[in-house]
Image 1: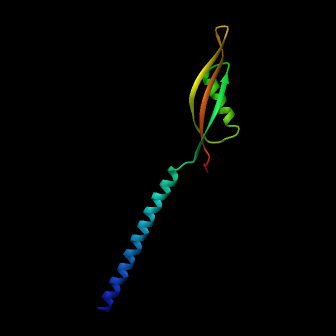
Image 2 (image 1 turned 90 degrees about the vertical axis):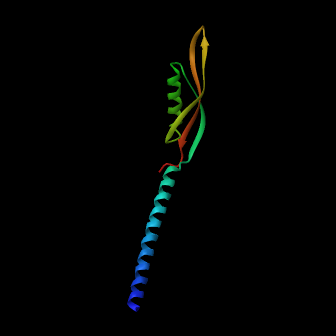
Image 3 (image 1 turned 180 degrees about the vertical axis):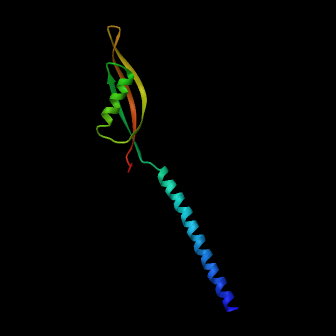
Length: 105
């Protein structure tokens, strides 16, 4: 009877350790997935212009932003304007919001 109790106690401990390890592994996986989903982003507003096109004005915004920030994720164009001289477009202007990742390892 003592041997049976010993074996049952031992078996119970093994099952407990295995179940805790599985639970710990499961929780760790969830935590890692949660951490990978999280990002710290910042948004700045930049005005850009070009004598060529709106696309060139937006590219100028990206070029200027990339001089001081890294990991640019997107550029949202809030507003587009042109200046006209003698009935011709002389300048393309864009107001943008540039989003970038500030915590990218």
